[in-house]
Image (cartoon, rainbow, N blue to C red; front, side, top):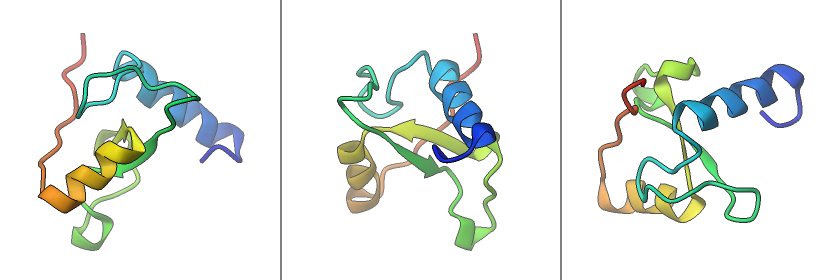
Length: 78
């Protein structure tokens, strides 16, 4: 996503929609902390790449989602 202008725009919108914070840890996402884009509904289960199905999380938090079977929801808009 970071390699195209539209992909960068989508990342920025996700980041701003989440108030710059990881939806799992509620800690700030920065270039230093790194991030991963997580599909709420997995693509193999019919999920899409639409912004409504994506959230940004820290890399470690993404690992926790999958290893612990955590359920992630999209933050409510302000």
